[in-house]
Length: 405
Image (tube, rainbow, N blue to C red; front, side):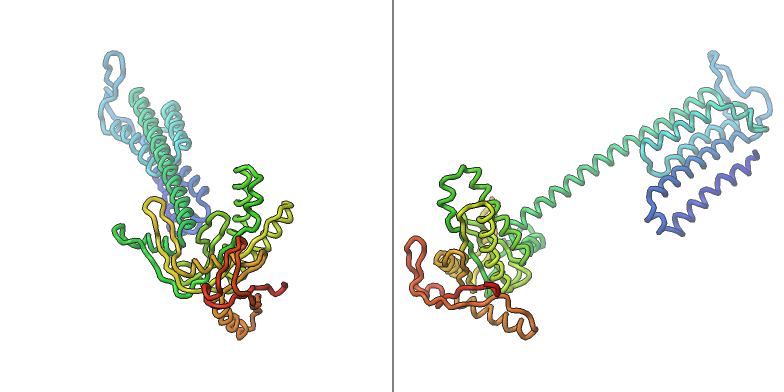
C-alpha cells in the first residue's frame, strides 16, 4: 500500500473523532462509555497505521544495512532506519495521548507484539527490510513501560478518589452532627465568620418554645435494665424527632425525659409559627399514647408552651451546643410540670400569638387546626405537690385542643 495512502487513511479517524468531539459534544455527554471506546479504537487504529506507514518507504541503496557487532545485528542510522525508529515513538505518543485504563492499555502492548512479530516485509510491496531484533525489543519494552505508567497513574487516581470520597463522607457526617447540635442557619453563620470572630449570639423577641415530659417514665424505668431504658427513650424521642422535621420545629435539647423544641426568628428557624408548635405538641401526646398502647405500657405525656423573649448562643469550649436562656425557659418548665397528663398547657402570651396567626389564617380561608380552653385554676400544682401562681407564667393558662378533640 502506498505510503501517502496510508497517511490519508490515518488522518480520517482523527477528523471523524474531532467532529464527534467538537461538533456533537452533547452526544459525548450522553454516551461517555461509547465515546471512550471510540477514542480507544481510533487511537489504536491511528497508531498502527502510522507505524506500518514507515515500512512502505523504499529500501536504502547500498550495502551495509546492518553492522554485525559480536554476532548481534545492529542497524545503521540511515534516513530510512531513523524514520523506522521514530515510528515506535509516534506509536507511543498516539496510543497514550489520552488517559486510558490500565487494562485497556494492554491492547497496545498486544498490538506492539503483533507489529514486531508479523513479517510485514512479505505483505507490503517495496518495503524496507525487517527491523532489527534490538529495535523490536526496545519498541515493545517502551510500549510496556507506558502501559505500566498507565497502571501507576490509575492506581494513584483511584487512591486519590477514595481519599476525596472519604473526606466528603467525613464532612457530610460532621455537617450532620453540627446540624443536630446547632440550628442550620447558625452553622452557616459560623462558616461565614472568620476563625478569630467571637461565637455568635442572638436575641429572639417572639420565640415559641414547647417542653414535653413523659409521665410515668420514672416508675417504668425502675423495673428495666439500662439498655432497655435507653431503647425506650430512643424510641419515643425518635418519634418526636420525626415530628419536629414534619413541622419545621428546631429540637433545642433533651434533659432526662424532657424534650424541648421550638421556633423563633432566624437564625433559630426559617419559619416562626406558634400554630406549628401547638400542632407539634398535640401530636407528641398522640404518639406517646399510641406507643404506650402498642407496647402495653403505662406512659403518658404532658407539654407546656410559652411565647416570649429569650437569648440564644453557643456555650462550652470542647462540647459546644446552642442553648436558649431567659425567664421564658423557666416559665415553659412551670407550664409543663403543672400541665395535666395527656394535655398541652399554654400561657396567655402564647394565646395572643396564636390568635394573631389564626386570625390571619381565617382571612385567607384556612382552617384553624386548634382551639384554646381557659383553665380556671389557681394556683398551678405539679405532680410533686409544688405550687406556682399564674403570675409566674404571665397570667392565666389555657389547654390546647385539636379540632377532633
